[in-house]
Image (cartoon, rainbow, N blue to C red; front, side, top):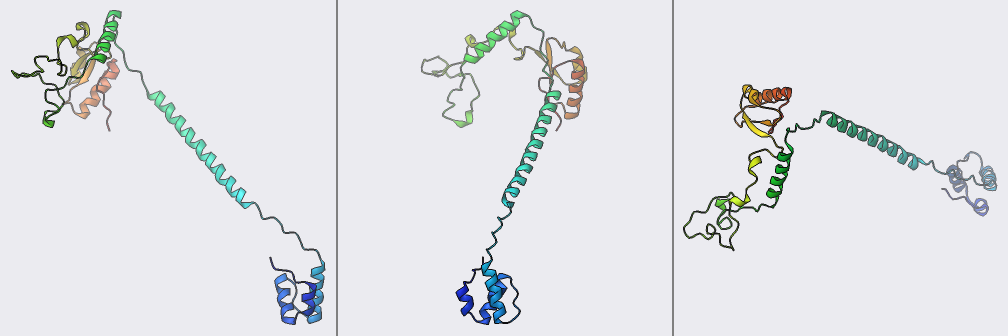
Amino acid sequence: MTDRPTPMQVRSAKKAELLAWCESLGLSAEGKVEELRTRLFAYLESPPEPESPPADTASDAEEAPAAEGEQVKEEVEEEAEEEDREKAEAHAPRLKPTLDPAVRRTLDVRRAIAGRRPRFLRQEWFRHARLGMKWRKPKGNQTKLRRHFGYRPNVVSIGYRGPKAVRGLHPSGFREVIVHTLRDLERIDPKVEAARIGATVGMRRRTEIQAAADEQGIRVLNRREEE
């Protein structure tokens, strides 16, 4: 804001200063010195106009992005809900086998035995990295692992085996049948058997087998969708 001159300064000022004040205050700079002083005196006697507060552009600018952010958030939530709805519609529950209560109880027993079964480590697995972690039966004449010395790791033994009634069944309870062609599906009982597509089957034939299995109500254990 331009400083307002005092009446004392106006009386003692020269014409150049009076012209500068008039221009800075937005007054007319025409006329003689007396006219300029009279005009300045009239301006000084009038009370200064209060400054109008600046427009609250900042709040408006803040409200606009906030509204846009809420709209974008609502759109994202709607898209997420739509995706969840599509997934729920596309999801189909897996087929379950028809089993006797006794078989189901035996499967639970096998699951409990597998949960407490120790991990069997190959002899000298910690000494040579090339041996790997895969189990191999110790056959050396002097090996302490084969002779079941107490300070050696556990050895694969008959006592760790699961119940014979459910031996070889899939964890779901199905009996697995290897399938390579569409004709192999004809010998599967959907109630107690499930298909496992062979590893040598190509993607085109695999897709055909999966579609045929869905039509016949046969579960495919190693289902793979085309990329």
